[in-house]
Image 1 (cartoon, rainbow over the protein chains, first blue to last red):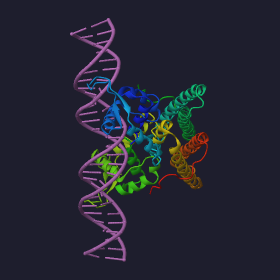
Image 2 (tube, chains in turn blue, yellow, green, purple):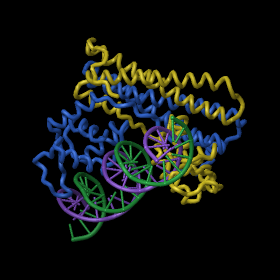
Image 3 (cartoon, protein in one colour):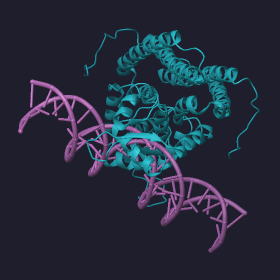
Image 4 (cartoon, chains in turn orange, cyan, purple, red):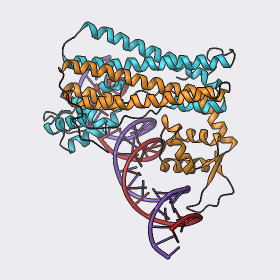
Length: 191
Length: 191
DNA sequence: CGGCGCATGTAACAAGTTACATGATTTG
DNA sequence: CAAATCATGTAACTTGTTACATGCGCCG
């Protein structure tokens, strides 16, 4: 039940069309909740049908024509209720941990390159987030909305730090055991 | 494509029936990949059909009758290939971060109890993991399989530490701003 | 007017969730 | 045997993914 609420939030920040929303999901929101345009159109339709949002009258209802939406009072109410709702923490669900467990049985060697690759990706993501934080700190200080946004960014930063730390620990532990001898990239190079 | 591989791993550790697998997913594996019995039966069927596992001949094929599976060589091959495969890191997708973003717009007050509640849950989970680590460290040292299992547990521990740290930071930041005055549990008490 | 990019969709499928149905085994 | 429990399964639905289809408008 999260995507519709993410859309309501985004539309409250600024009324938008489906494609504009898609682009915003690719950027900021997408750092912790991604969505494709198909999902977004589907849910925009449902939200409109339920009377939580409406298409701005300016836009006509033909196919390739831009169509902007805004949140109705009922939609805002629903969002307020969702924020206050009691929801259990989402439990962890990560394929890499699963693969490590499988590797415990069939051998860890072939997983090492993946661990190194993921480490590099997370280091990069962490650097990006830190750069964003640097930029943000120069601007706004007081407004609650900005402080909350910064908190979310802090979440991203600390999560990446977790990955970097854990992957480093894992590589240390596994490489130590298998006595060295792993050249740089014994894998096919994807796109 | 993860659940079938999780099942293969579990069956390699020990041939089992569907319900036994379900129970094992509730315990150890479920800490980072949960599954219901319906999902497991469905995938057991598919895996058998694809020739990656087979039912042990002892068990008859009637409905309420126990049916144990074991991994065939082809299944082990598939698992080996999966471990070595290149897969992009799963991006973050957490409703709590979304709700915080929504709260930035509609007001953070009603989210504070949830943040406190989640903090308590994560603190408890962390304590549980630490207790497990304590127990594990007393046993096995050398075997690779045990060291890898410990690494996975370390992952769980560090992830919980992340949550505890971040939630604490978030509560500090938000409570400071709204000047105090939030009684203990202004929410309905769910089951 | 032909092709490209913008924009909105449909369709088919895969994975996860929730509710329910049915057969077998134990035990009071 | 009745009831509880173990065990396997179906069905319907929601969410997310992938591939494709269609319409509009601009620019050469």
